[in-house]
Length: 566
Image 1 (cartoon, helix red, strand yellow):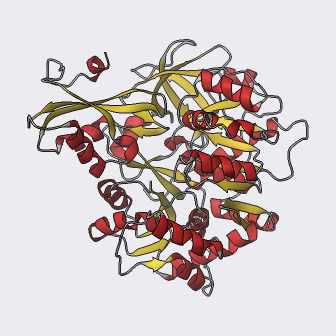
Image 2 (spheres, helix red, strand yellow; image 1 turned 45 degrees about the vertical axis):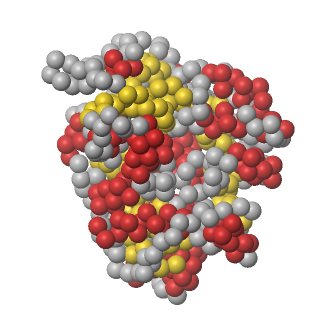
């Protein structure tokens, strides 16, 4: 799969949700604003050249500077022999180097492979090899992980950056603190590694070659779990992302019908840019509207996060239920001036009503809940932005989007009946990277994506999720698949059987609980947790271990997770 045909979906038989649309929002999106994300980015850099585009740790890059530095990245990549369609991995938190690199890769006609910086060597090796990545840009804090897998991958170029590389003189102090005081950079050695600043410097002396990038070319490989637990890449085209950008923009425009839209807005980017939610709703939407994105490198450090909010007035805040809850439990957060806040968008996991009500009371700005997946670029539905009421639903399908609730046989169900939420629209991926069987299992013949989430649609066209069809566990908005956790556990010589389920967790929404039948009678909970820590990213690791003499099974020997849930 290198490119795909762009097709708009046919009209649904009965789009009842259109009757609930905000005034002025059309049923369909118009023509694409550009032929590629790179083209859209370049236009914004011309139109908003003097405005700040991204801000991190008190340092801002203007759109002009973003254009110059991303052009240098693109030129350098081309000079190394990378050609249109080649994959380049990006393994960084929310720092200025991240968007500079991502837009540079796209401008070179290449495909971005977003990588979670907290991946274990096992997880990283799989993703790099599955994507066929030829280069990787990585923060030095995580270079030791790359070092461990590098000989077993096809990576030709490793570009390493330090936290302060784009912060000017202040960056030297930041790097010293990160390396020597906080000791956040484990020892690593990659003799062939190239420094990020050297790449930008060298790239400035090279002419970037224009690349004919079309809407059907793949812009991103966004890796997500699957029914088998094997991480696979959702191949998102330039059309997918640009369509979702326009769909979201139409929804936002409806809320500014009174003409009170700020001349320049600031988006709060606390979600990681390697996650599809922040990639589209923060980065792409911010660039398209000439807005500034305030990057938060470590949103888990709530006191430091609040200090950033004390310095900057933000207008749009995409986030997760757990993040909203954590902020409200900080005494200094309640003292902030929220008068500039226009929209707070909740996604990634369900927004809980008590959290939404408390947030509204504290900030005066309601949380608007939406829904989407990596496979849908991501937004498929969202609530109206002109209401302050918490609906408890995931809202209405966006323009040019069809939602159908279907049964196991693939037949449409009546309103109010619970079935699988199926999505069709220009933001839906063409398929998974090099996985035709997985693609066929989730795409219907008439172009709907089977989400795996169970829900129903009411008479107004609002959709509510009631359960998940799959056994997926949702930890802080990230998918955790029991099969992967169980497979890792079973590789321990002291474990005979293992089964993982999700349990409610006040901080992360859900947490992983692992049931184990010992092979080694001396095996302890600490042994299991230490082993999992070596092989699983933090959010996938079991928080609770329960030892049992046997696990419940079906008559054919399949472990029955539903009985473990009680």
